[in-house]
Length: 119
Image (cartoon, rainbow, N blue to C red; front, side, top):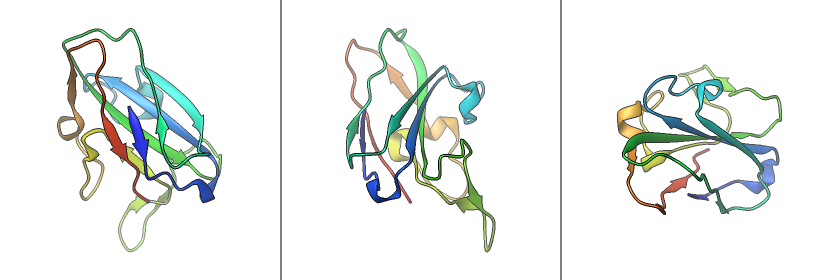
């Protein structure tokens, strides 16, 4: 997976969460696999291995800029993330993207997806 658009000036860590199926989406603590990486480059390659084929997956990336381990939100004038976020299929819109809009099928030994971070 290729992550791009990472704002390295913000410091912190990236939390990359892979979900297998809709169960638990989008809460990071429910992720099937979770990787944490330093946000030191504007583009980063992330690898997940030994995944079962023919399942539906979705990925969410959270840039924990302040290192508090939380997904910080601002509430006014409308709810939106305070920190960077990225979702498979680069799905976006008002509110959190649905699993269906972020879903992709894993069907071969190497499959590349690209996620662009939004701030």
